[in-house]
Length: 279
Ligand code: GLU
Ligand code: ZN
Image (tube, rainbow, N blue to C red):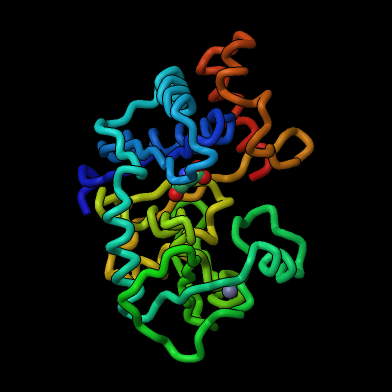
């Protein structure tokens, strides 16, 4: 691949203000695209109907511009692409990769034995609703969640361009994960692979909190006959005691720092310092 073909993306969710962690990851994504003389796209991941807010879309665009991060229009808006996600889901269903899960929120909460790992978003599912044999279907039942059947025992490997070789065991590190929600929307995992594929993303730059999601997405890409992009996971920001900076720490919102009088260069320096300290 010639480096001129590099296509990266910024994929913020408009569920809150961008914070220092986003600044670090998005700045890295921007630098990677520049170094490769590539293209950087912006994707608005607004699929969460309760938490996504138009004012956060405006705020993220303004904050990115203030930081000096440039991307190539047009902005891709996930809520306008439901037909594509539905089509990919139908393919997974038809090829036996998906099954309905009727576990309640409470059932799922009781399943979690180990304390919820801070670095993962989705606990391993115990397989309660998983059919014994793969069954294909052409009907999407409304009001039902669907999961992806992971190949138990198989090691999912990839070489991260920042963190080096990674491996995760299906069924142990990542369980059968949600791909379609009962409210008729795709999960983050499914929407992400469909969009990375249709935008021909060559490298995904994201925080290390999403490493297991990368493993899940590699399985989805395989099942959907899509090529996996390369990956570059950024370290998570820590404060000077080594504590991970929580996502919703309002004081670290880029615009709060800006209102406190910091320049964009100072915000980026602050992000870089928190990154470097605990590598
Ligand atoms: N929208 C996701 C987030 O804000 C990131 C998605 C990604 O990089 O794949 O956490
Ligand atoms: Zn279930």
